[in-house]
Length: 360
Image (cartoon, rainbow, N blue to C red):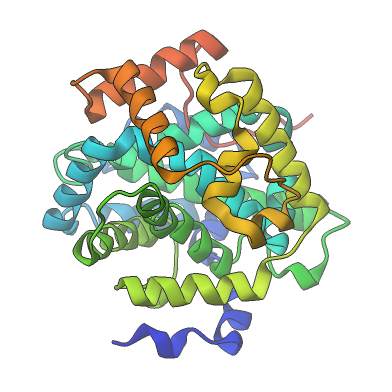
């Protein structure tokens, strides 16, 4: 099917008011009994038999995943996991220097993000949780021999639904013109930022990425999107479709906003104070500008102090990776390094956990 016919303003206006009923119904049940969320946080994977006290909404949500346990696209998953094992350190770097700030430049979606105080005030923990999520969904054997990433996706999907619940219930300043919080357009756009935009970043660095690799990673994130409640009928299959989808969303939502500028300011400050490699920490704005370009950088008030040649930035990323991993880079070594950094910074490993609402 040619997805290009679907990429219209009228279609995406409709998606802007669609959310994720399966997850939203589960969250309505979870907020009524905080202990249920605490129980789920203790799981290592989704059990085949749910606690008898769970209501149908929660059981139906997790049954969705059990029904997919043996339906993962094994070839696609293996290819994507091998790609991450080779490029995972740069992949994570591009998420931080390109994908996340790119999302901040889309004003309506940034309004949701800025309402999470953790993204602004606990940005290190939030970024580490994002890294934990990505490492988990790309670990060798994920979704095939190792079923635990199904639970990871389920919990992140529920966290999105919790965010919608809190905004709908308590954010008196929410403007309906923003669309519904964490709507289908924003979910598709975020999925695109974590896949196609990362590949675009690799190409900007001079990496030889071909159309087959783009299609393979898009297929991987189509699977992830399905598990995250994304309407995958609109998900691109080819580089051309991904380009046109990004172009449409960019045209619809790229704008300067107080929310976006607040988010990028928090990210910039965190990088400058914590990145141990001075070649990166001293040039944060210039690296942002290199990847995002003039138009997106202007929306975030990112100045160009000094233009970085592609070859130099590529060498900086390569040198940083070589200094950290030597010749033994793999998913396992990247995970060990991230866990070591988390223990050093936060005193514990970052886990993806559902909010447990304490009622007085």
